[in-house]
Each structure stands twice: as structure tokens, then as C-alpha cells.
Image (cartoon, rainbow, N blue to C red; front, side):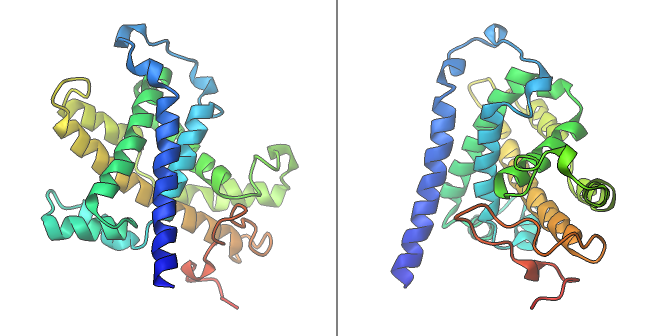
Length: 256
């Protein structure tokens, strides 16, 4: 049993690395371009961009690994971690060691750098971007979303619960990711030879934001399943082959 469990973890990690590597290699031509050669695309196309959605799929895999939200967030608040604390952070994020953790989150940041340049994200509304991040995360993780049910197909009750009752609290959970990343760009030139300060800042920002995304997801699914909305039993089952949503995470929802 332990062998099977260890093998499963290994396969999950290899799958994540493979997905992210394929995603990054698909844009290898962009790496060879000079900054002034990059064609800035219309931000209106950002939400449905295939590379953005692939990035969110990779993000969903990373967030699903989180095992101890509170511990990880506590450690990320520290200005510097010793060796033992780095190991604790890795395990709280769902990895065996800090090297594996950094590999995954650095590759996610590489994807985001490419998207930032292509869609000029630093000059877009941070709250709009963060809303897209969260909504797309739900779309790639769950079946019954705007992918399978158009907005026109929502009942008035669903619209009210999704966007007016349960929407504002989860938005308050998210600290604008793009604003936090701007601070990293200001610390160190990400295009220079020595990117150490930038990498450390962006890695920490990415990890913290993945935790906030996960917590916002839990809060939102719990909210629409509670008596605040009561729009049906388990309205957001996990995608086929995934782990069903753990409703025991919802303190105010009776577990049968």
C-alpha cells in the first residue's frame, strides 16, 4: 500500500512537470525574441487564450496538492526560512522537498511571464485578472461551469448566489496577484543575468497566491452548497478522474 501511494505521488508530480514543460516548450519561439519583437495581443482574448487555460490547468494541479493551507501561509509570511522550515513549507504545499516545489512553481512563473508580455498584463486591471484566474480555475477543475452551462442557462437564483451572495467574499480573499508581481519586477530586473531576487520574490508570490486561490475555491463551493444558496447537492463535482470535493472542509455544512 505504501509503495502504491508513493508511486501515485511520483506519477502525479511527473505529470505536472510534463504538462508544464510541454506548455512552456510550445512557446519556445517567444524565448528567442527580443522584448521589442513581442507582439502584444488584445486583452479581450486573454480569458479564452489556449495557453492561459493550459496555465490554469497546471495551476489547478499544483493547488490540488496543498495539504496544510494554514501552515504554508504562516511560513510564507516569514521574511526568511531556515532549512527545516523550507522542508515544512514543501510538505504543506504537497511536495517531498523544496527542490521539487521550486521546480513546479518556477515553471508556472515562466508561463506567467510569457502571458504577461503577450497581453501586457501589468497595464491591465489587476482585479479583473484575478477574477479571471479564479473563474477559470473553477472551470478547469469542475464539470458544471460556464464551459458546460452557458451564462444564459443559469437561473436567477444561481446568478444571485454565484455572483452576489458567494462572489464578494471569495474576491476579498484574493490579494491582487498582478500587483504583487509588480513588486517583484521592481526588486530585480527579471530579464537580467542575475535573476535571483526576482525568482525568489515571484516564487513566494506564486505560492501564496495558489494558497489563496485554493481557499477562495473552498469558500465559494461551500457557500453555494450551504443554506445561503441551497441550489442543489454537491453542485460542483470534481472533473472525471479527480478527487471529489471534500465537503468536510465546510464547517457549516452537515456531513452525512
